[in-house]
Length: 470
Ligand code: ADP
Image (cartoon, rainbow, N blue to C red; front, side, top):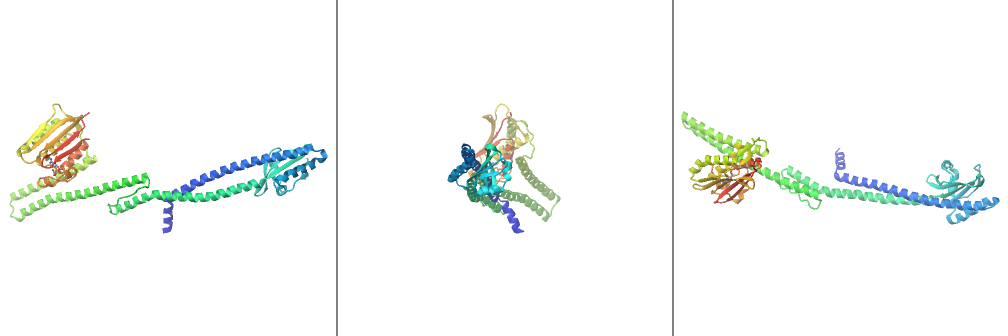
């Protein structure tokens, strides 16, 4: 049973199929070549033989006609003898028949004797036309019958065994060479397919290793053809992407676990301290308030996570409409002014004179601005500066939020838009590392671009660019 399965698997391999195709293709083209050459050779030989046959018949007829009536048969015999002297008695022959089919004279020779035994060819004979007649199962002669005087018929013939031998040699040589080349072509097909499939085998080995959890496997495939190399490159890229996704996923789940544990521990702590003391009704009120606050924080975090995922995957429906960014930025400036004042931060805004229209979801755009301004104020020490600007540059709507805050290290810049990423310097501040991730998803959903530049200790600038309303 097992060997049957292995055999059927072997028959289904690309290697075997390619070798088979090579062999098949070679066989068909080889056979076509063989039959065309055979046909050309055979018809060329018959043409040459017919030429000789007509010459022989003419020669014999000449002698016959020129001779006196009594010497005619003699002249025929002499003419044959002369010709047979050069060509051989086995090669050419003749027979003279009278009106009733009675043989008046004939030459000897093997083929002729055999032909005499076989009369079936006679039906095909047409006077003055050469025909081929089989004399034996595997050999034949070329025959010509021409009328003489007094209803007599002269048959002349040429034995075709020399030509047939030549064709036999050609066939044998061809089939020996054909068999060798067939084996070689199948072997070449096998090797070529094997070479091409080697790369695929390497990729499948790596895939199987990865499916068992070994993400370190890189497929190193060189000099096996561009297609396989491209496959290997695409595979390596995919492997890298999966590896980093898994890493991200682990990190995100760690972060979620951590961020859920903290408020839950706080809730537990609150309940424990309240219950262990001699709680009054007022203590229960405080505890309930604390729990509600923590729960709100948790729900907020979960909602933000869901919104990031939904916005990123396009599952959330944005209410697109014509929105004046100038109005939104100005409102955000007013809204955050008291917060800035609490930290004695100089909070400025620079707006163009005319409205700046974009196509977007008003509430989500407000969230983008609010998150960036909130971060700027949060990560800027007291008495610092935060500048909010809106302008139209090269036909695009550009908003910047610049602060003179703690700044972001070079190594962190590429990560701050990732979920739950928080720079070390900001761990003392409240936050969960989801704000910028949501901002990034929302900006992208509006076909915009967000960029950041920062110098540690000097400040940070976030630049958001949106396409204008058309
Ligand atoms: P968080 O809730 O921690 O503020 P965010 O996603 O909004 O989360 O920001 C991610 C991290 O990027 C922050 O923890 C902080 O380290 C850094 N960051 C964001 N904005 C600023 C800024 N204006 N100045 C310095 N660091 C910033």
